[in-house]
Length: 135
Image 1 (cartoon, helix red, strand yellow):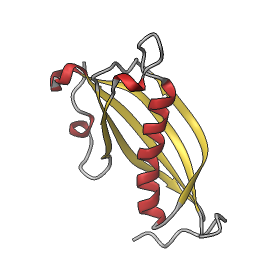
Image 2 (cartoon, one colour):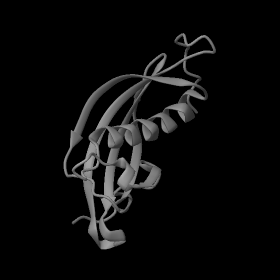
Image 3 (tube, one colour):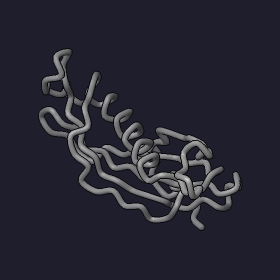
């Protein structure tokens, strides 16, 4: 069991981006939460930060790393924290850490996954565009 990740970091470095409850509809026939469901939540979280940085539409172009550390269980409160890893001319790379609060008890928070994903800023024709200047 671990403390909430935001408490271990400087304020503003990591931000809580997505929080969702794992439901029975997110499982396979044996009752396990699909890894693809978790990957989807991570991609949504990463894209939220990427859109903020790009100030507009982005597309996922690469998943550099995705580690499933522990299973997500039905009823877990899943929290995705994001951090800007780096930017390029048209791309944004985002780190995502995922934690599960078991049995809705804040003392049972465990890291269940982490990822590194690159998004590219795109224009109205879905073509890469330059990122705006970061302030």
